[in-house]
Each structure stands twice: as C-alpha cells, then as structure tokens.
Length: 237
Image 1: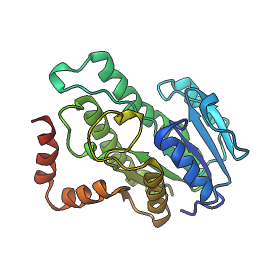
Image 2: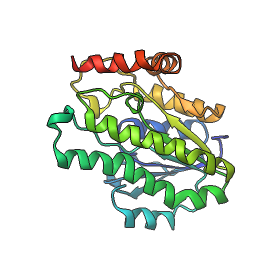
Image 3: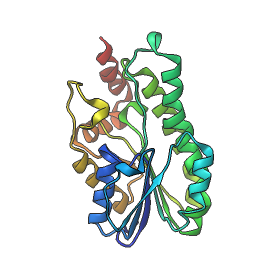
C-alpha cells in the first residue's frame, strides 16, 4: 500500500517498536496515526498523532475505539507481552497474559476493524516474531502465543485478501527494547526495524523480515525448517 496520505492505528504505541513505527509512518507521509496505548499520556505530542487509551485485553475498549477510528486504512497490531520462563516453570497467570495480549487481543482487534479495513480498502499488519516458527525454550509462553498468532494470520489471509485487505506478517528477531533489556543477544534498533516494516508494507511483502538476523533466519526457515528449529532449541541448552 501507499503509506503517504494513509491513516494508521498502531497498538502498543507508547514505547519501543510502537513509538518507532509511528515515527517511521509520519516520516513517510502518513496523514494521521492513532497511537493506542494503555497510558496515552506517554505518547509524544504531535498534531498528526491522536493518542487513544487502549488495552487490547479489554474487548469493550476495542469496540469503542472502532467507533472512533473509522477512517483508518492501516492497522498495525504491535502490542505484545513476554515473560521469560521455560515450559515446566511458566507461571499460569503470566502465560494467560501472554496469550491474552499476543493472540486474543490481536484477534479482537482484527474482528473489530475488519469492516473498516474493507470499507477503506486497507491493510492489516501483525507484528509476530521469529519465535512464531519455532520456540525458544526460555520463552515458552511467548513462543506459543506468537505461534498461535502466526497460525491465525495464515488462516485469515485468504478471506481477508478476497475482501480486499492486504495482510502482512512481521517476523523480527531481537529488538533493542525494554522487553529484551538485559538479554545478551543480537538486537536491532527499533527505528531500523520500523523502517524495514514500512518498506515491506510498501512492497507488498506478505512475510516481512525486518532486521539482518530475521532475514537470515527467515531464509533458513524457508530452506530448512528442521535446522531453524534446532537453532532455537539450542537456546535452552
């Protein structure tokens, strides 16, 4: 799609990749961006940014927002939650939170805004993870919730495409945000990841690998899924 002149809604917009996505969209000429955040006061002021209170686990709040942001033609589901725990030790409440944000909340956003995207001939972008393809044992719940969201993206794509909605899945590697603070691993800058996501949207790429690590691993996944899975399994050894 053409980002110049678009009206976007970005979830998880107050920091990290969400904030970088807003900056990238505006730099490329987006006319307006709704910035969804649990604390909209944390969204930076700009006349083109409309901060909106949004917790994606609150279905009523999503429904209310869908009555306000009726002009969007780009929905970027970026909000995410992560805990660090191997599968045998995962806290049930933490696991439920990961699924509530990363899967159910994403699904509720899609259901609420699909009629708007159809009307406006819009585009849907789901920010997923390389861990959607294979789990990292230290992040069992996060990996599983992103895998579910990846499967949902694939399941919805045919019907949404027929309805005129472009559907993109984004599969980043590590990003230098609060989520991975203290983790000793290669991490890409949020601004470079956001720019690459915009490039992928503009190019019409269904699967977007927005950093060098994800580009390399995405190629490995498409060539040799077993080797890809083994690489991530090694994180727990």
